[in-house]
Image 1 (tube, rainbow, N blue to C red):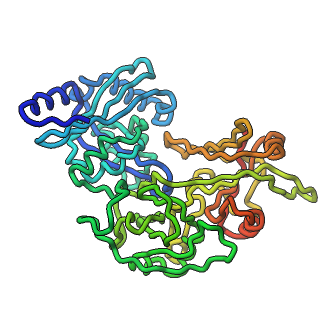
Image 2 (image 1 turned 90 degrees about the vertical axis):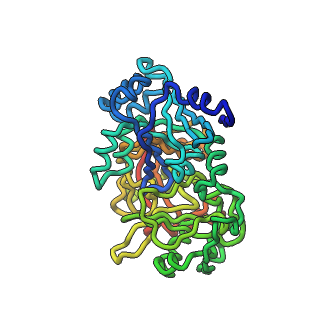
Length: 445
């Protein structure tokens, strides 16, 4: 980060901008049915010499994108990224710095310059890291003409690269008092510009045997309370665990957490926050910006699962995964009510409820299981996305032996279980007769 004042300001601005590609725009895209994927911060440059003159290697990467697609390009590239900041008196400037190592034909550096105030409301979504996509104006126009375009469609128009957290962007956001609901971990509720919304405390039915992180009460704004109703709130609470705040990342502790529902066309997400951290909700939030959950927790555990095949009981290796302890996806049921979408993160695997639809030995596409030492890992790649989600858990020797013998594992995905509970076996047996769990067969790589 650099900040210059006085007579040197113009000279330093010239030095900072020299040789850069000027960004024609930027936009943020996040998945609307899987709250755990990172945001895609799309940086747009003009087609033609203005961009490809200073960055001929970008032209080569875009050609590879056209020929092979975003996933193939991401898997076969090594690209370093970082942000740089010049806090100039005439307005702050941000540079996206790119260093291509592989493919060798595109090796080299280029930098894209953004006028920071133009994107004041967006920096908070990428300041803690995520995915950056570099695309062109023509590709962006084609994307925006498609009213049904998805997160995967957006990723397919970009050279997608990962980027880490940036102290420079944090400094920029706080210095200029730009939106920072997703970043602020200390501001009290009465901070100017950060009004504390009115939320009602809602007590929830909870079993006497419920483990510590179970949600026993929620703080809910009146709009959300009316929209969900008692049954909807109870359904959501049964699938959430009060572990970490989805705004600041710190433990939620014992006070009732605040429930925040982001309502997008056809889908919504529900997440838990500290009361002072949670953004206000005055009504439905309808925007291309879905929530970004950098602090989502997941858990996984392995076990031997009995399975009847004819008259013979067999024991199979199973990996049970809760992909989101503090946030879940919602969808409308046939009556138009919001209900939890079980294991939306694994939607692409076509998991099924327990019953006859589960086919043993038929591997789900888009995922693989691996044995790594004494651990079983699940790698899941949603179609069309250059993102791999990995969940793993230690496994005892009988579980490892069963996985090798059968050539795979049974995946059980649910938000409804706390895996450290000493009642896990009983609770798992109970929800296997409900609609709160999904199963699939994952082949061993």
